[in-house]
Image 1 (spheres, helix red, strand yellow):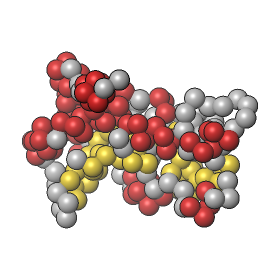
Image 2 (cartoon, rainbow, N blue to C red; image 1 turned 180 degrees about the horizontal axis):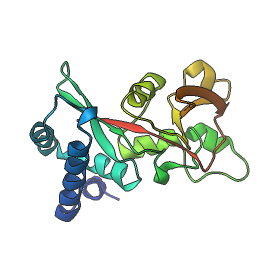
Image 3 (tube, one colour; image 1 turned 90 degrees about the vertical axis):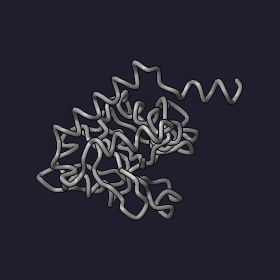
Length: 192
């Protein structure tokens, strides 16, 4: 496959683009508490100026992430989109932590890993701090959990961390990186 055909696969059709903009605008306007000082017209202009980011947002949307703007980084001039679905995105569950964990698993392998899916989607996996910041904007993962960036010293020992919200408290836990569950997925972040 040539580089041009790969790039074309990451371009949205006009219909997909319009549908994505409509979904993003509707969500943005419905959830103003997530971004009280931001205006959609500025977000839209930034997206128009960076069409390369639309494919990643589309992937976030298609896998059930319901991406929304949660912050504007004035130092970089970038809007930060995060998966704001109530539960861990449906299209990204039942995945182990990373490719090394997937490769190490001998039987009953999951179809994918969280870290590799992030790479393929062009997004970042939330870290624990970002996950806790998201939880300040609402109640997320009340029935599911989400893998988060695991510190290297934990990963080297075969572990990985995930978070959820129970009892009105955000918890961080550990598990073997090879593990996967129907109720565990991951949340991503995209800077535009």
